[in-house]
Image 1: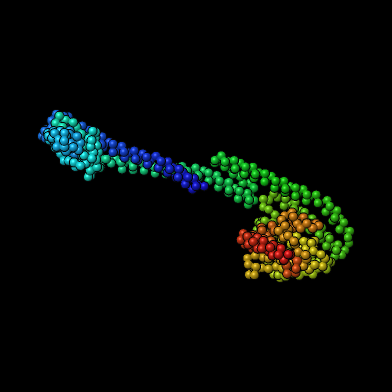
Image 2: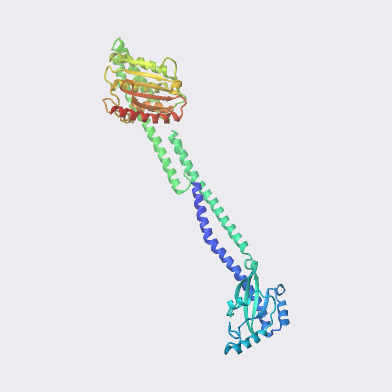
Length: 488
């Protein structure tokens, strides 16, 4: 923006300078020329009184010597050819012959003094000499001033050197050029200062927007700068206040709703105590314990007023993905056995540490495995594979595959709150998994599995870079297209 303002000011100032400086430079040149020829006319006027009195050479030379420039040879006096007998007439032509003789005789009474710089032909071309005439000459110009005397018509010639005609023009042009350049520089400085004021306010607004997007809800923008940016800063501060208030209300609502579950959980725990012994009773009690722990976790998280979204990197949390997957598969395997599902687990024979909190990874795996049980018929096989090391690059890939009917619209399934439209679907499970992946710089993909059903790929970047997330999103969209083609 600053450079744009500077360019605009340069263009406008340059046009103004050119519009005024060029005509003014021409006027200065014309004024210098008029001044030089006016001085020449005054010099010629100093000789006219002497010509009116006498035409003697000695007297005229003494008169020229009294002029300021007479000794320089710039003034000459001589008779005007053909002036008294009619311009251009030759002696002896009819009735004009006698008159022509008188002209020559009269002209001869005016002595020629000084050095002539114009020829007879140039004098005749400049005729009739009724006023001052300017002709070009070598090294400058000559001003011819006709004077009518008792002896005839004489011509006073004043030589004007070229340097006198252009005297002071170059200096004036340099002053004009310097003034124009100074105006342009001043406009650039002013535009840069104004641009700095505007750009500074805009940069502060952009920086605050980035910080707010990063989760720092306390950021605010100083209301300063131009009127438009002050309005934008005030609107941003109001928006930030509303966002903080909405998030606070959302956390309070989540805590309140979770707290309401305590009463039915208490009843459920009392009922499980009367189930007796057995695997089913034990699993039910474990599920109730886990549900109670999750409710407590939700309440604590909501009360802490964290600005970081769920699933984000919190305090450098790390867990062993292999251990978490083995533990959750052990929990879901009992249900799979009851429903006659074939289960395969691979890639969890050694520790794999990922930058995800254990509770978040457990929630993500339960969401993926719960979808398999919820949206595929009993007896449908599924598998969980973990890839890491050189084959997966700088990331960990968790594949959850099934042999079910697949997902008709993977894009819709990844949209929060949409789900697949089936019974019991809230549309939040895959969104929870996606946020866990994106918190590490990874991504979530849905495609066709080798078992014939759905394959969900959970990419967890180990370096937390954004490149993995970008690549994952691109590959995820490619996976969606492959899935739709397969369905056709």
